[in-house]
Image (tube, rainbow, N blue to C red; front, side, top):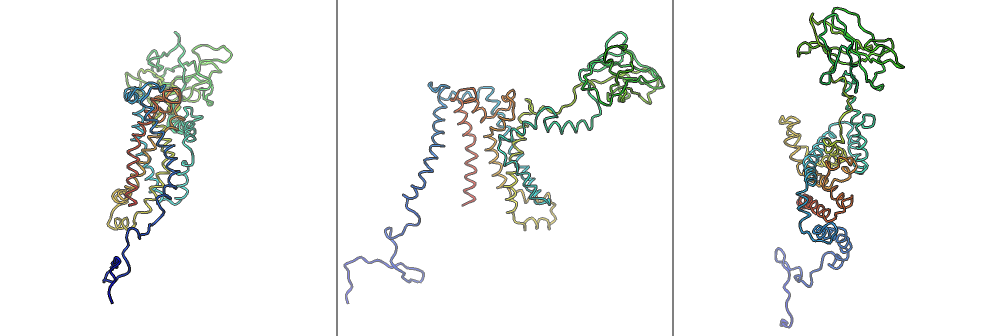
Length: 458
């Protein structure tokens, strides 16, 4: 039987052991896995088209627009970018962004780590997580409105100053009488000196001191104030501080009349030379007394603090504290987000490593610092970089919380971009340059996050 040679031979495919299982696959016979390129392109085209319209085109147009002047008719090249780094207000804006980038991500990540660790220690962990995460359900604009009210200067309106003044008044016994002053005249025993009220002549032991005060506002007069009463002479230094005013007229200037009120809560000092040797506080009838002073002459003084305005807390919305105040609102919103991500990372840490360290005698702080934090470093880095991106884009909180009078001191790049372009500046060339500058700032951190995600999924 002869072998046919009129057709090509197809060598059998070999497997381990030399067994042939069939003809070898060629490019023509190999079957394609998955859809064809045409189908993939058909599905990707709508998304690619929308991406080009909403992302690529605005970026390209902004780059081109940033090279022209405010009207868009004159080519200025890099002039708008030069203005960003030469204008004083722009430099303040960049400085504020640097403060945000340095402070806010660190604080948010640290608080998120602390809260995540606490959720594993406390009994009501679910309720705690709910409370901390709840601000994430509030928009940044609503959070700005909330904290604008929290930071109000008046303690009657602002929660922050209400708490501060309550604590301050609890530990401060002095009663302020803003605008009050001593009654001047030849018969008066006192005069004003560097904001304080002092006796004109040295006071001897056993000699009562009369300190008439005028200019007391009705709202500043305490409800517990009673009719002023001049103390009787004794073996000590005593006196009375009272509101030298009789309603409806009458009365004798510089003398305690029957209807005039004492000024309680005033701090009084007995001074010898330049040293305060005794202190006292006026009673409800305005009287005071220094016990135990040795014989001699003294100067009686009402310190300047008695005549200063009542403590109303901090000026959160002023030039000095406006940026830290807004960062506090940002932390309030994002701390829950950081807590949830870090808590998920904590749950993935192998408990064997923690228990082995505790068995070897490590303290909880050592376990946390040398095992928990290093194992959490990838999650902490993701949270930290995400917060940097969010701080570079912050706009709503600064726009809502900062009053218009201090917005130049609290300004950030995103807000300045809007203000220059649409908020009255009408310079879309400079606004486009600020938008590209902000994109350049954000881009490295976005690339860092993308690369990390790819490494984790590889």
